[in-house]
Image (cartoon, rainbow, N blue to C red; front, top):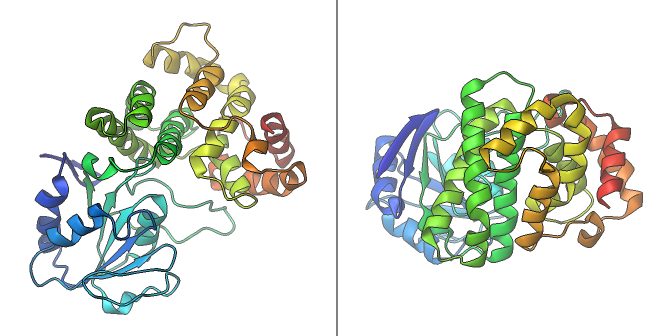
Length: 346
C-alpha cells in the first residue's frame, strides 16, 4: 500500500478500502459515520465492501444524492435533510456529487473520508460553480482519501469516458490557469499524460486494472493541481449544466476546441509544453487531438447532440462569465465570448 501525505493522507492501492478504512475511522475517532453515496453505488458490491470494512461496533447511516438511503438496517432518509446531528464523521463514497456533498457537510467534529468509485474526482479541488459575489461554503479537505482502483471496475463505458475527460480537462486547465503554482503545473502535466495514454483502454476494457489505476492516478493529479483553479471549459460546462441534464465531462468534450482556440492568443507557448508532454508533433492542433480522443471514447462532439438549444445559450453564457473558473482562465472571457464559443460547439 502507498501512503501519500500531500495536502492530506492519501492511500493509493488496489483493495486499499479493506486495508485503510478501519485505520482511518479509528485514527479520527469516528463512531457514527454518515455515508453519502450516489445512485450508482448504493447497494453495489463496493458499498457492501465498505460496510464490511468498518470496525466492529461502528454504527452507520447512509443517504444518497438522490434521496434514497440504506445501510446496516437504517431507514431511508431524504438526501436534502442530512442527519448531521446524529453523526460524528462523513464518508463520501461514489462520484463527484457524493464526494462534494460530504466535503460541504463536513466541519469541526465531523471529519470527512473520501472514497472515489469513478475517476472524475477524488475529493480534492474546487467544488461547484461559485461566483465572487455568491461563493459556496469552502469545502472541507478530507482527512483521508482512499484511492482503490478495484472500486472503479464496474463503471460503465459511458460513465468512464465522461469521468476520464473530466479529469483530463481539469489537469489541462489547471496547467493553463493564470495562478502561479509550479508544483501544481508538474502534477497537472503528469495527470494529463496518464489520461491521454490510458483513457481509451479504460473505456474499451473496463476490467483492465492497469488502465483503471492510471485513470484514478490522473484524477488524483487533477484534484491536487486543482488548487490553481480551472478555466473556460469548466466555466462553460457549469453554465450549460443549468440548461441540460448532461454529464459534466460530456460537455467538456464538446467545448474543448472552441475554448482552446479562444485562449490561444494568450497562452499558446504553454500549448507547446502540453504537446511535448503527451508526445504530439509541434504543429498538432491540441484542441482537435483532444476532441478526437473524446470522440473515440464515445462522447458527442456537438452540444446539440446533448439537447442544448440555441435559445439557452445567452443565459448559460452569463453564468459561465460569472463562474469562479473564469477568473483563472488564461484569457478573461465575457458573456458574449462564451456565447460565441458555445455557438461554435452547437
